[in-house]
Length: 116
Image (cartoon, rainbow, N blue to C red; front, side, top):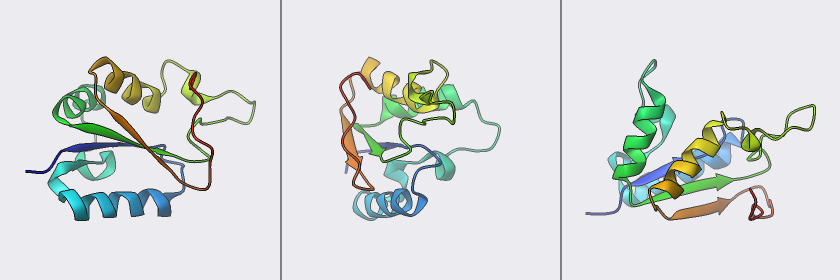
């Protein structure tokens, strides 16, 4: 049995690249072993509870990191710095549960800073 993976990404990230990452992971590990919210969750589902549960079930979190990852807004604020940010929640939950986080860098973006 191969490891189950949780894919964390920002929806306004480069969708072609994010889709390609998903396709490659599914080809390698199997579609049922890759949690990807838009393909794995139902509309109206308790997203927070489901994310906690899926991270608990996974062997590792794959964090897709590109130019939109920090979620910089027009006023300069960074969504990743806000407590309500979903990507922040996913990564904080992975840390809380002691799951390894594997960054996949796209769009020639420099890796995130330690404080990120």
